[in-house]
Image (cartoon, rainbow, N blue to C red):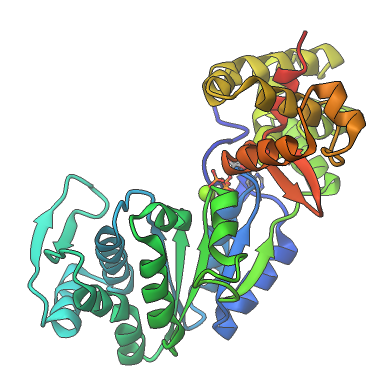
Amino acid sequence: MKQVFIFGKPVADESFTDRVQESARLKASFEAGINTFIISPRRWGKTSLVKKVIKETEGSGIMCVFADVFKAKTPADFCELLANTVLKQTSSAFDELVVNAKRFLGRLSMSVNLAADEINPVQLQFGLNGDVQTMEELLQLPERIAEKKKVHIVICIDEFQQIAEFEDSVSFQKQLRTVWQHQENVSYCLFGSKRHMMEGLFNDETKPFYKFGDILYLKKIPFSYWNTFISGKFKASGKTISEHQIERICDSVDYHSSYVQQLSWYVYLFSDKAVSDADIEAGLEELVAQNTALFESRTENLTPVQMRFLRAVSDGVYEGFSSSGVISKYKLGSSAASVTTRKALLEKGLIYSDNNKTFLSDPVMGMWLNRP
Ligand SMILES: Nc1ncnc2c1ncn2[C@@H]1O[C@H](COP(=O)(O)OP(=O)(O)OP(=O)(O)O)[C@@H](O)[C@H]1O
Ligand SMILES: [Mg+2]
């Protein structure tokens, strides 16, 4: 069966809607060489947006590199992974990759490995032992390539928050910022799935990445786009869904991009020619059922007071957690204890803060918490 709705992985083309303003702004930043951070709760569409803008800039004289550093566990891993990605994505063929590696990194000792990865089988290894000088050489690689090719290079780094987990992370952040801010022909677009950690990297004035670039906060995709998108998909398969029903889908998952597509998929699957309200209820049941094991594992180590705090947010309490009414209703202890609980949940990524209000990161978790 054709996959009508796609969720949980980056989307493109006919599975992608809106992001008109964000695409234009990101494209303008790429063209102007402005560093950008992209922030949103999980699964709202950061990776999809960046990939779309990269595609749109093809042929414009800007060279984009997309690197996912999720697997990097140390600064050396990070530098090696980034250098490999930059070499691969700026070289048109294997020969050029080898020439570039020799030309720009000739001073370093390196070995070529053939990895099991079919798409990118060549892997250069530089025998790094946390040696700052060698890492710097690798970090300078994009600037050298940009100068040589006379282009501007934009390096997009997904899962950038990983660097916060490195041992002695702040020293490495300092090194990165020092090298990157002097590069004239390279700019950076940094984003990641862990919002709280990403914000910790550049929202804190004591941290090296403070004010490193522009910040793009993703918004929710509005109803008008979802309406056209979802009704179009149903129509193309000979089914009908009303505007009111689409609104119900979007509202019930609080316009969370991935869940809108996932719920639409279940409704599509369960419905006959015309969608009924019962199909939507069944879709919601399925959505909660599909995520129950995940929610159980994400909450199993929470303290009772942390669970009660989550319940408060899922009940619609978004602020005033230090007020006596909220504290006594949800048994949050004291005002100081409530602040500590909120902080712990923010760090775990279970809640996020927007305009001084607190929300559940995952709207379906809210449904799960509210079940009798
Ligand atoms: N522009 C869009 N149009 C339609 N659906 C979208 C869009 N962006 C995201 N989605 C939905 O959200 C899902 C997740 O998208 P994506 O992986 O790009 O998000 P992300 O913010 O990078 O996630 P993570 O926080 O896990 O890194 C997609 O599979 C799709 O269902
Ligand atoms: Mg992503």
